[in-house]
Length: 155
Image 1 (cartoon, rainbow, N blue to C red):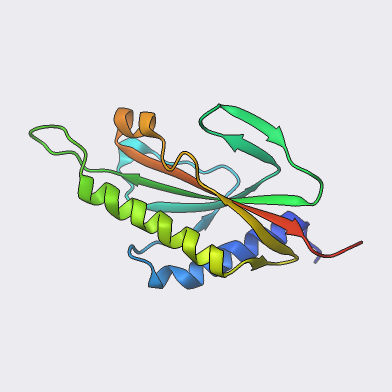
Image 2: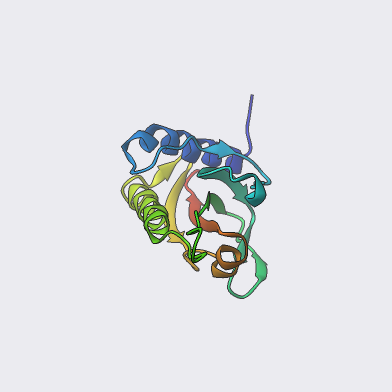
């Protein structure tokens, strides 16, 4: 069965991330989705989602923009419920540091493994590193790593 280019690239990223996950600092199984849902009230712990988009999403500016025809973006969403100190209500800096380290490991992995399907990685974006407002409001660590791939094959 034929697949869309973005599907092939997304599956390649998910497969690579699944294979590499055992070597990372935290245990997770990536979940492929087009609409990641994380219930911060259910305290689900660490979840890693892999999905594809055809537009650039800028969390800082709150904007969306189209991509060029041969550019495909796969996003890796990392979500984690951060524990709070029962006395002070402060978020666990140890847990936050662990999530930031995991982000760095994922980005470093893809810097070394740039091919995915018929695409080659041309950019890794992760700004802002995490959503501070979401973290303060719900205690949920939320970060999106965007992997931009350029199509290699011709039609």
